Image 1 (tube, rainbow, N blue to C red):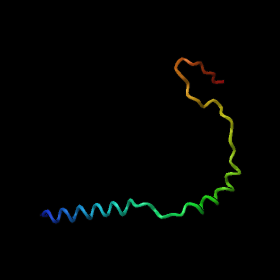
Image 2 (cartoon, rainbow, N blue to C red):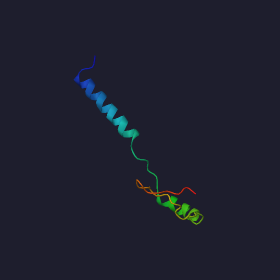
Image 3 (spheres, one colour):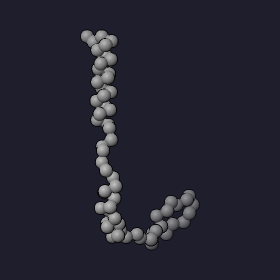
Image 4 (cartoon, rainbow, N blue to C red):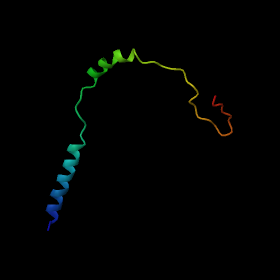
Length: 63
């Protein structure tokens, strides 16, 4: 069916297709950061409510 040249052409086509599909999108990032600055003013930061890891044998109060 396919000789060595056909297999090589097929491999080049597959590699080229995968490279083309996985290329990064060319999106400008900086203009989008200025749009989000006003939203950061509305962000609320809450104090830590004990979301730490518990070590073995450490007592834990769930109240």
